[in-house]
Length: 474
Image (tube, rainbow, N blue to C red; front, side, top):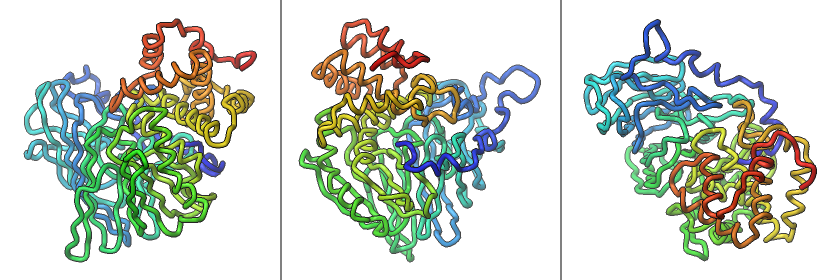
């Protein structure tokens, strides 16, 4: 996700997610010892400690949803298939708002309770470690927007002809129950029923469409594992086009005609070229298809694009062209760095944003001849770059702050300078391959660099990745 195109997204009244999430996890209530068979209601992420849940690993989400644009109501069933990583008498799912009608585990009715965004599920019989199980949740309501600690919005954006779902960092829980943390990736099947004449688009591949009774169902399937924050649903009037890059990657672009200004159309016309160039730099494209989703939203409502898996989302909200070449390069680079290689925790976001920002610098040198040194010097000179080390955002409000992007890119610039172009390019391709479709931490990356190069890079990382002060010179 690039930094907001305007300061508007930072000026929204900041309502910390603590106002949405429960103040105390269910497992910490009461006076006795924690129940060893209760799945933790939070994974202890340093920046978002209540995000995600413990005790199980999700392998697949099956979402069958129906949306009414007139009322804004969403209704559906979620089947969360998982493997128990401990004995469980209860487990939690993340779900903000919505009304839960019924819940079952392996077909047997389960008792439930709600506390903030925690849906606690008590199976009829205990689940043993290693057991595979499926939680089915029938639910409905009008999905809401969440306000992040930095003041930006995420979740379910209602549009004049449908809706758009954006989930970074924890917005997916606004429209489906799940284990909402990037460390638990899973395959997805998403079926969305909408009034005939509208289109529902998402990531993955379109498995089927069916029209009956004045409604059309669109079934999207992601066989590659995806983090919950990278799942999207776009509903509305789209012009859908299919093509391929010269290198053979299938493309699907879904564009709201109202957002198809000349600059956006020109930028999207370069998508095949950009994707093939990134493939040459970063290694084989990691998914079955790519493309873009461009929607039309109320002016000033979003302010950012998002690297949703397979095809990133660009909300055309009146703050300039919906898509420009730089943002397209950035979001497509995330398909390798962020989507395929996903951060293990939110403090590792520089592995997403630093890499995507450096991809911008590489592209600018390739496309317009701007030297890497000039891009790096601009970031180096900006005082905002040095607010904190990129590997250690101090608070949840800083997860998308300038050091994560610009100083994260400077880490890669210094590594590039130290190793030389040939070795650095091999390192980038090797890193994306070594962690393909998995998770990685900052420590994983620095250890990989040491193994790959056989060099002691500790001083470089100590200064540029972890150091608190700006070096004397670039």
